[in-house]
Length: 403
Image 1 (tube, rainbow, N blue to C red):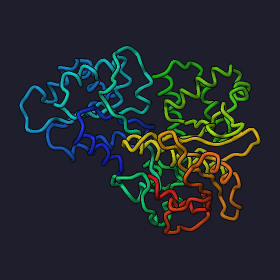
Image 2: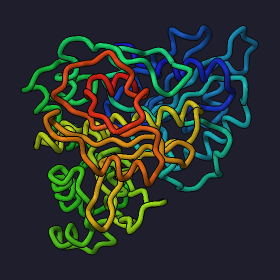
Image 3: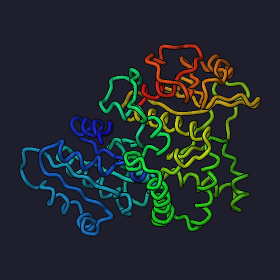
Image 4: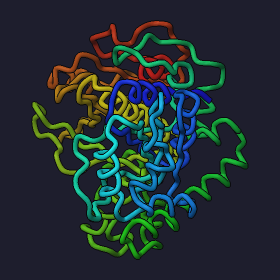
């Protein structure tokens, strides 16, 4: 299926000499996306996957070995396109990529993919600063199911999604394979297999974590606490480890795209909460409780949007939440260039009165917009972002305006 990220990669390779790093969770479509570039660009196309032993031998042969098989030692009309897949598993990957890029800068289009964050592993090698741009690839979202071309601004016009896309996405998650199959039995098996691969392969092979049973227990607990404040002491007591160990393990799970945390916004907020973050899962399908899944669903869409806007160079965007010591709370705040832009409160029902904390925090933060997103409302063909006062909006309208 078409992805908006194909447009991002295509435009990058046309306009820039830097490598592009495609980073994101397992099975989000990074390899498929990189292989699609074979049709986009003429010339030699070379795909090297570190997990393939034959490909690994080529990489271990050094920069000149890869250059030779890519035709970089020959005069050609078009530069080759070279994909290095999962190369971060190579202990000297940074040294290798730095040497390759510095030697053949401008002579090859280079794509690097990884199912864990490529900036995590610093085992030797020099900095790659200035030699690459990142593209953080997320699972499918409601907007991407209906729009795959790049836009010139952050917020797009709303559109009516295809029948059942919203329900399918909420039920199956946004990873392409289970979404397309739309089969409950397949989904159950896929979820188990994916978590086994994450814990028993990725964590075992690429981190120093030895207590895999305990970190798997932590992963299970986080499924039931998605969207709640992350109390490290309570988690430590449940798993019988120290709070510092819990912090380190959550960072490890973040690095493998199992979960993500958002911090509280505290500027101009009297008695703001400033310490405990909230934790969400990359795969909202793992959250069983309806309210928690709805909140995680919106969190994932917002995170995808802020990453997309930042990676495209629109500015610096970030996702936060709001809570003070009087327990006034709003689920999300999106900032643009370190200034509050819009607030989002999530409700499963439109019958709920508008949260009075939206008006309170909008006044304190001076955010331009404040939305209460309702899951049971029908699509309305109106631009949510023309509203400046707190307002209840349909999830299906709001989400199609993002990415």
